[in-house]
Each structure stands twice: as structure tokens, then as C-alpha cells.
Amino acid sequence: MYAQTTENAAVRRATEELEKVRALVAAGAAPRASLALAERELAEAQDEVVVAYTLYGKVGVEDLSEEQAGDMVAAARRQLEREKLRIEAVRKLVDQGVAARAALTPLLEDLESRRKTLDLALSRSELIGKLLAMVKVEASVSETEQLPTDLRIAERFDGNGVFRESEFKKVVLAFEKTFSHPMPVSARGETALHRALGFDHRGRVDIGLNPDAAEGVWLRRYLVASHIPYFAFRAAVPGQATAPHIHLGQPSTRLRAAD
Image (cartoon, rainbow, N blue to C red; front, side, top):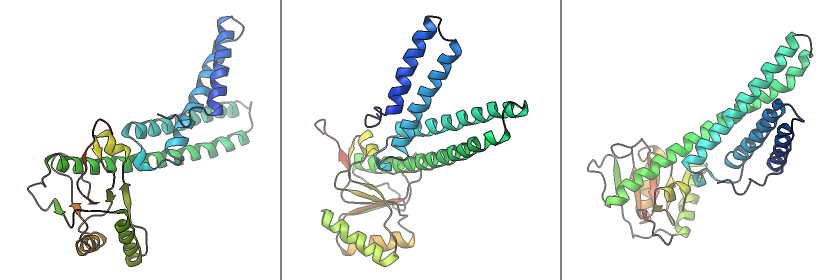
């Protein structure tokens, strides 16, 4: 899953060190406590790889799967908990007069950094959950090729039946000129979430706008005037989470085995 980062030097070093310590412990040349320490250092290096790839790496949020989102949050939680344990251990030494109180300062700074990392991971995981809900909405419509009977939930405009990259660029420019901020594109082309559900999203774009909000209304009118096909979802179909958005292009289709 994290092929691009598993060759991280820190992970390799921690793995090699663990093997050395394991051999020494087996031979009775090192205390068993050193094995637990080496295992913890390897776990820390592995969690750092996960967080670096899923949270701080170049991978886009739409390219992460549900499983990766879960791994990201779990790794960030473990990092925070380990930092708390370090502080607890040093605080005991401070209370015993063995260590200076100043020794806690860098650890407390690290703790705050870990908290911020976990907050970011939770925020990104929540966004992935929203994107997944959007994909499920589109999938439920695409599978039947029909809209929900309650037209207040979704609407479809077939336009000229074609959606090109050049048209999308015009939409983006017009939106940014009108509202003076970037268009909230939540999924452009193929994503890990669409692929996980077996749907081909190539040549399609999802915009994270409520169709009835001012920007959503403007976008729908622009698409109609430009004859660009779209689906506007005010909420998920029954049984799914709420996920208002506007899908540009024709419905997503099922991926073929060759894809």
C-alpha cells in the first residue's frame, strides 16, 4: 500500500536494529527490555512512513482509500499516545529529582505537534468519508441509470452528452472570475474511491457544492447555458449519507475487467 515510502531509511535501520537486538536477546547477551525498545522504535518509524505518505505526501485526498484513511488516523493516534508515555516517564524522573524540569519542554512541544497531526488526519479522513458518500450516491444512480423518484434529491441535465477538458477549463475560469476563489473540485477523473466501488470516473468531475447554494445555482445555470451534462445531488439517495455535490459529465460506468 505504501510502496513509495516503505524503503524509508529510518524503517530499514529500525528493522536491522531489531534483528540484531533479537539475536542478542536470544543469546542472553542483552536484556529482554531492549527488545521491546527496538520493537517500539520500528513501530514508530513505520507510523511515520504512513503519516508522511497519507497526510504530508504528494498523494491527493481523492487518491486515498478508506483503508488508507483508517491507517493514517490510527498511526497518528499511536504517535500521540507514545508521546504521552514519554512525557509520563520523564515527569516521574523530574518528580524524583533525577531529571531537570526543562527536560519536559521539548517533549511537550512534540506532544503539541502530534496533536496537530492527529487533528489534520481526522480532518482528512472526514473529507475522504464525504467523498466516499458522494461516490456511493453516483454509483446508486449509475447502476440503475435512473434518478431517485424524489426529484428534490437529484436532477439530471444531459446537455449535448459530451464533457471535454477544454470545457472544464472554461467552467473553472468563469467560476473563479465570478466568485474570486477556486472552484471546490472534490474529485477529478479517476479516484481510488471510485475504483474501489468498481466505477469508471475518467473524464468526469465532482464539485463539492450544494446545488441550491448561491454558487451551486450559478454553476447549474452556467452548465445549462453551455449545454454541459451534469447531475446535481442535493443529498444522498435513501440509505446513504448526505453528500450534496454536482457531477460534471455523463454518469460513471462500471469498470471492465481489463481496466
